[in-house]
Image 1 (cartoon, rainbow, N blue to C red):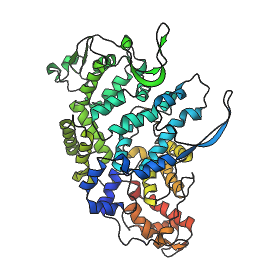
Image 2 (image 1 turned 60 degrees about the vertical axis):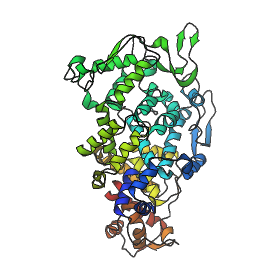
Image 3 (image 1 turned 30 degrees about the horizontal axis):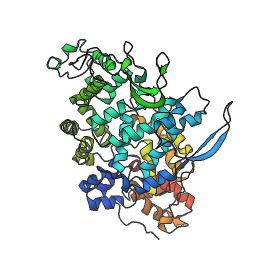
Image 4 (image 1 turned 90 degrees about the vertical axis):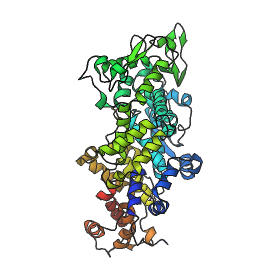
Length: 521
């Protein structure tokens, strides 16, 4: 029988695990305290996939229900299936993108739901917590909307598996290239239809504004000619204007996917969903991007690859990415000195395979991250995952929980604008948002969506136990302190020595998880 802890977890380690992981599991803060942050980072920044056994086992065992009525050309379905699209090559999933086939909408959205479920499982159970935090960060940075397009949904497992996850702690230029060639992004930002003479600007604009240099480096309101941009005369433009977007769009013409499009005559591309470069669709003439001259008729894909080089290695990109990393890990308004230090390291290590990992290490070991404890509001994914991790619930994702997450405002892989979800407190603390956050915690504790039974009395002897015993055990796990126990008991309408049934104990623990100390990180 477990006994209630006599002391709260080490404060620094508890706070670090709320920033650099999806919250601590029981005993993890003490382990990190003994191990030290540096040693913990050494392991986290070089994750060994073979050592992530619990996460892999749960992914293999996970299932989701799928249910829909019969259509004109397909039967009704009501069954439980494993997460079958996660490891499937894109050509196996791509038929779901074919609008001419009679396929139920639930089948077309199945890949998104499976990636959502896998994201939750990894957030709760993966040993490599910092990688999962960074995977979530990059999915937001390189946002695609799988809820709004069946082709993006079909390509989402590949996007997660082949573009984001392998590079989340690696080299930004390689990550940028993987995203640029990913079918999900090519569909979402319309580059698959970009042709010489009719270049689509969507991807090029977001490459500059969101993925790379950032809005702060958009100088179009100041300069109308490329040569007037500071630094342009020396071939090192300090920012970009609309002309750079237009020229970059031309550089990416011909970057497409095998979606059955016609090539002239009776020739057509295959229907696999894979990336393809079509030379006949590329604008081969000279270009100028960020004051760099591109000679005409370069080798295949060279124009686009050069644009990616210019963006990835630009100082403004380093500042933009460093700002967003610091905003995610430290504070909504991160300290300028830390942002500059992170940007300097990002630029210095631009050719290193662990560029991102070493930039994150600098942020994670800075005094600013410790001083900022509690400054960030947990988004719904973090809120659910951290409660699951702290409570030890035997977690199983379900469609009910996935739908509740969508309703909470964090539509995983279904956010419409390319900006990605907001990462500041104002969006997540509105009146309506707070109500949904409370529902997420209470519903998880009381198993509204069949995600796992929570018995908070088991750790303190089982059966009917005193409120003081329940709070004495669970409050430090959830909030890092014993403070507030009497107030929580009073809010529940009980005295500390009141004996609680299991359902009452659940509500008391959920009430502790509604406190600001748990809701923030």
